Structures are given as C-alpha cells and as structure tokens.
Length: 113
Length: 113
Image 1 (cartoon, each protein chain N blue to C red):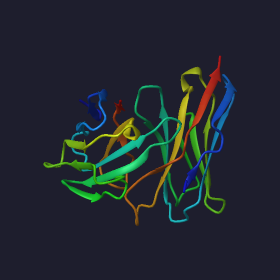
Image 2: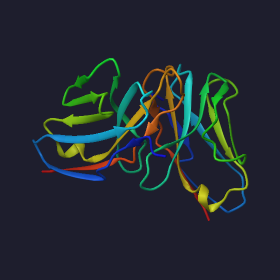
Image 3: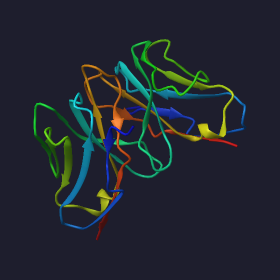
C-alpha cells in the first residue's frame, strides 16, 4: 500500500496479557516512530528507529515496552504484562529520513480490561 | 513538561472566513515545525511544515507563520471549508539534537456551513 499500515486496528486484552502491535511503514522510509495518544492529548513519543536499530527509546515508559524492526522495514511494538493504564491509541509513523515530515498510520486502539 | 502548547482547545469559524490556529513552544532548540490534521478514528495527516530559517510557508489555502523571537507559530486557513473541520496538532523537533516530534494537545476546528 501507499501509506503506513497498522494492525490490528483494535485490540482488547485482559490485564496481565502480552500484546504485539504491527506497523508496515511506507516503502523506502528509513525512519520509523512509535507514538502513543491518550484521549484529549497529543501523540507522545515512544521510540525511534533509523534502519534496523532503535536510535532513541527514551520515550518507552518502562521495561514492559519493547519494539523491534529486524529488517529495517516492518516494526512490532511489544507490551508485556499489560495494565489498564496502557490503554491508548498507538500510532506508527515513517519518514524518508529524520529531517522530513512523518506520515502516520491509522493507529491501533488498545484497550486493557 | 509540555514543550509545545496549543492553548485553544476548540475554534469555530464560518465557512469562507479565515481560521487561525495558534501554537507556542518553549524549547529554543526547535528548528522544524509541522501541522497535522486529524479526523476521528484516523491517524494524523501531514499538512504543512516550516523550518526555522523561514518565517512563512504557503501551500494552497494553508499558510504557516513562524515568529522565532516569540516562540510562536500559527496556521492560517483561507477560505475555510466544512471539510476542514478536524483536530489540528502542532509539532516541533530539534533536528540537530533530537529524534522525536513534540506535539501540542490539539485544537478542534469546526467550520460552520
């Protein structure tokens, strides 16, 4: 596809379970970002990849959160032992490089019950 | 600490008139600014950007103005159309020192037909 694709679009999980959220960036984009957006707030930075490596993971809230991008394209955000406070829309974005605008996917709405 | 602020949570404008959305920032290292538009249940869509070497950038009905001394930017939409009704987010980054975009909390624009 032409845009950033995120799957699933909605995920409901029980507290304590493990979840994986997937992001397919725009082809050829080397930079990939994960953001989290709560109701009434702007997107908050989680992690940035340049190619395969996590160049900046300073936004990850704790060690339950982890993300990978093994081949420099698709990325997976992994959340262990989910908590109700993890409920939010998780947004992925990609850009040609760090100095250009980022294009967002439609997001994955995660609900932890 | 919110480094990018949008102090107006909502704005209503008559169709055909000008919409002015405002954004303030606190970090003097920010040198790249963007505006995104977001419809419900969709990810943010890139609208327009400006780098700190300019004070104005125009794209069709959308113009962004940057006042570096005041640490203020604004988005002008002329003429406003009902399809412009959405939440608008301002974002900023420091390309030389950081990897993330910092977002404001958004302004919900309603264009009244």
